[in-house]
Image 1 (cartoon, rainbow, N blue to C red):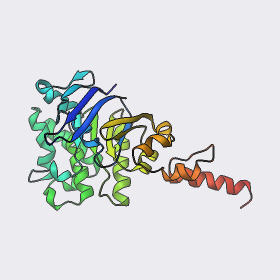
Image 2 (tube, rainbow, N blue to C red; image 1 turned 120 degrees about the vertical axis):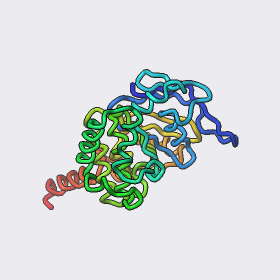
Image 3 (cartoon, rainbow, N blue to C red; image 1 turned 90 degrees about the vertical axis):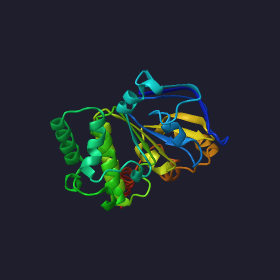
Image 4 (cartoon, rainbow, N blue to C red; image 1 turned 90 degrees about the horizontal axis):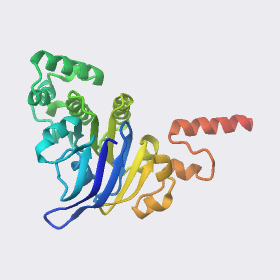
Length: 270
């Protein structure tokens, strides 16, 4: 397992409950969506995965390593965290310096730093941005730079807080492809969202949160066809599931839906 949360609860100083007795086992090599409405506890849960927040009760384990103050450096080496707003983690004068920052902290040799930065920049298509100041970039470019700053350290797990918010159609597709490529290397992606349709199409596993509690966890095809669970969380049916719920075949994306409808049309002679 990549992540284990054992009976984790957390209450903020103002009395707001973040998590209530959360028990989760998240699999390695999967894209897992933490799904719920605003205020359901999604971000609070994610902040526990790299030690930004430490549990008040219970325990968190990352790759069999229990999270506590003494090992946060190693935890954050294994868990790259992408914030909702990339401006929260881009602060250097140039993109190159931002990518170099994490490597500086872990004592890499200068030549290896350069090699890693150039390799990651090439993979993400941001080589031409290395001399730019972060404030000069678009939101999509900033998100690419922010995730480059994570993967240059080669973490085993990438945690993303609402990674697709604010992106236009092209930016959304590019960012999904970027994360798909990382997942294809056997890495673990854990992301928060309130987008049921995107989760239905893209995630391998789903955790549904409501008021800090886990209502349901499991493979996407099981969780998001259990209408009671996500309706209890205040979520609506995934559109494609709703359209094809009366059929045995249930497409996960527009391409599968078009191919299915085309095959039906061919059968009836249209």
